[in-house]
Image 1 (cartoon, one colour):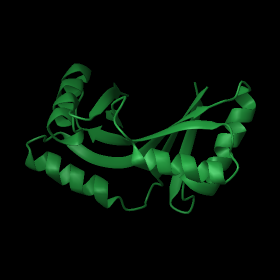
Image 2 (cartoon, rainbow over the protein chains, first blue to last red; image 1 turned 180 degrees about the vertical axis):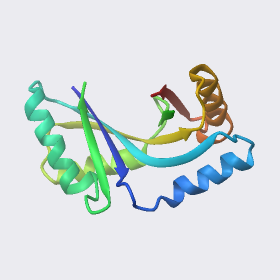
Image 3 (cartoon, rainbow over the protein chains, first blue to last red; image 1 turned 90 degrees about the horizontal axis):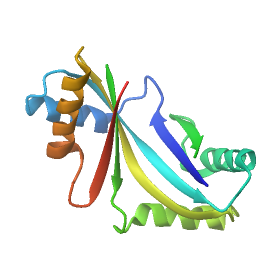
Length: 79
Length: 79
């Protein structure tokens, strides 16, 4: 079973990496770019058959290690 | 229009960040974790109405700036 975790900065938190990327794209003549935000995608392979238990476990991983919940939000998808 | 770009290391390319995360999770007693891979998720807001043109443009951004295609693959989703 796999869990796909997307960790991204909360709305309103400055994203210097995204801003630098936007400027780079603009300078490369991609004029339609309005905004860029950069987050992490973490793919976890789990030895688990229970979908609900897996989701609960991954949520705990996010809260304790994978995300900084002061400035970041996350989504979990079990596939 | 938004483009969600996921950039991840190709199969077989070592992922030290993922490995370190796996070890950390194991040491925190998440025993069911078998593997962790870490990639980037880039969300681009585009000033464009044409879905196909947007996808083509984002593909060009990936090839020229966002991904290192020697070691990375990417997926593009227009939403």
